[in-house]
Length: 101
Image (cartoon, rainbow, N blue to C red; front, side, top):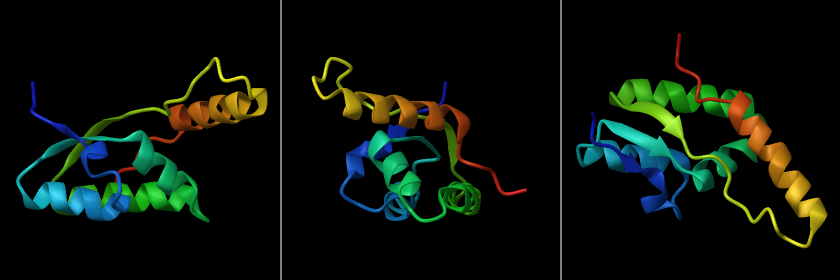
């Protein structure tokens, strides 16, 4: 077992800054949070953003063995919002942080 930390501890920060700060204080294994995943996914070129995050993790000597999927209320009366979150959840399953190769 490897000790790890969830990037949600630094959710107000941009994903890159959160990852860099965690590495700076000695973490070597992290779980990418829902908040940070959503920030990358909302950018203009999310595929490239996930690859860049993988390269940053490699540069910092970090492992990101898992990401926390989107958290939302499946009983939300706003069916459109539920459907959007289900779509996002499916995207999470297809878009792991890409490792630099």
